[in-house]
Image 1: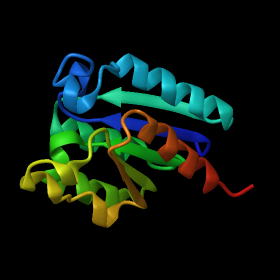
Image 2: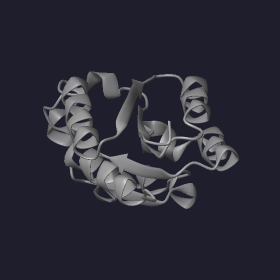
Image 3: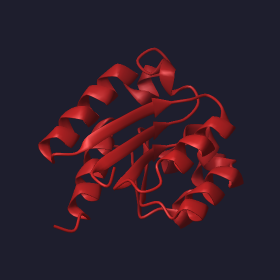
Image 4: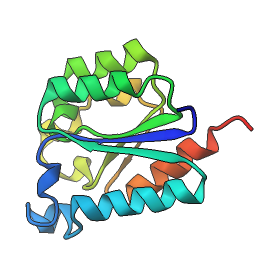
Length: 145
C-alpha cells in the first residue's frame, strides 16, 4: 500500500461532463479515472479511485487510505463545509493534495474558504482534470527511494 495513491472525489462529481460544463468541463469522472490511472502507471503506482456523495463515507475513505503514499482529494462542496473531513486528514496523518477542477477563487465568495487547505500538502485549482495528474506527480515525487 505505500506505493498506492488514493484519488477521492466528493459530492456531485459523478455528474462530471453534464453538470455545468462551462465551469467543470466536459470530461467525465471516467475520463478523470483514466487520466489518474495513466499517471499512476507512469510512476509505477497503484490507484484506488473513489467517489461518494456522502460526507461520512468520504471520512471512511480517508481513514482507509492510511499507510498509502498519499491522497488526491477533490472534496467538492465538503471543502468549504466539512470539519469532519479535515479532522480525518489530521487524525490519520495523510499526505493530501487538494484538487479543484475550477478556480474556486474566481467563483462565489463562499468557495474561497477551505477546511482542507490548512491540513493539505498543497492545493491545485483551476486546471481542470490536469490538476489530478499534477497532484499524482507531486505525490510520486515525495517517495523515498
